[in-house]
Amino acid sequence: MTVLVTGGAGYIGSHMLHRLADNGEPAVVIDTLQTGFREAMPQGMPFYQGSIADRALVTRVLREHRVSTIVHFAASTVVPESVRQPLDYYANNTVASRALFETAMEQGVKQFVFSSTAAVYGQVDSERVDETMPTVPVSPYGWSKLMTEVMLRDAAAAHALRYVVLRYFNVAGADPAKRTGQSTAAATHLIKVAVQAALGVRPRLEIFGDDYPTVDGTCVRDYIHVADVCTAHADALAYLRNGGASLLLNCGYGRGFSVREVIDTVKAVSGVDFPVVHSPRRAGDPAQVVADSRLIRDRLGWQPAYDDLRTIVGHALDWERKLLAAKVA
Image (tube, rainbow, N blue to C red; front, side, top):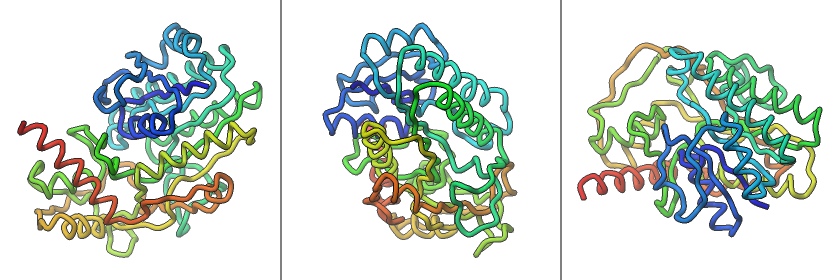
């Protein structure tokens, strides 16, 4: 029962590959390497460089490796970039996923785990977001993911396909064993950027907007450790293999931290008081997005192990120090 991991050389995908390898599960990878890193993957894992929109490539991989399940991470994921380049996001995230779905169904794949996002909710008024709330994205990134969710739902209704959609909140941190982490130099993830500022990789950190209707005027997000996201995927795979019906689930802890609270935590953990400057709001940024995570805990039995902001920051710092040491060497 081989698992195809799309985008497996990327941040979250590479963590999932290590989890599968740790569990002794056979896996194969397709990745363009446009934003991923081959060295982030476990050694010896079958790898194909290419696009999920390449139906001939995907067909060959599915057949040669007798793939039973696809875990689909491959996507463009930067919200401000999606506002500037919307058609690229619809092509990379939505159109390419449609090709993947069609090829998978033609080759008899019956199980699918899709990496979606809390960005599908858009601006929310409630303290926590549950899966029944309206989906009105405020960025092309969010819309591209929501469209892909809808395609997967409708395809599953028409064919013998079962799936789990995981709507991530703000994924952060790194592998506790330091095998992989967030390696993109121009990453926009707050904790990654703050850690880089603490280590002198960046001269300062920008706060984009301080006039939001939140506790201190800065955006509030639900930060989830990447290792716990991988646990959710492993739980989703087990659920589908046991015959579970299709599900759509939030993947977050259920509590939020403001940008300023994250900055203060990074300063405390690193021991560095790095410069912080204020800039205007960015397009596509909701004021507050925090998960209601009761459903994923109930349906998958998900039990996160790293629900602690200082731990998340500490692992991100460890990884960034490893990257710096590699540059010096």
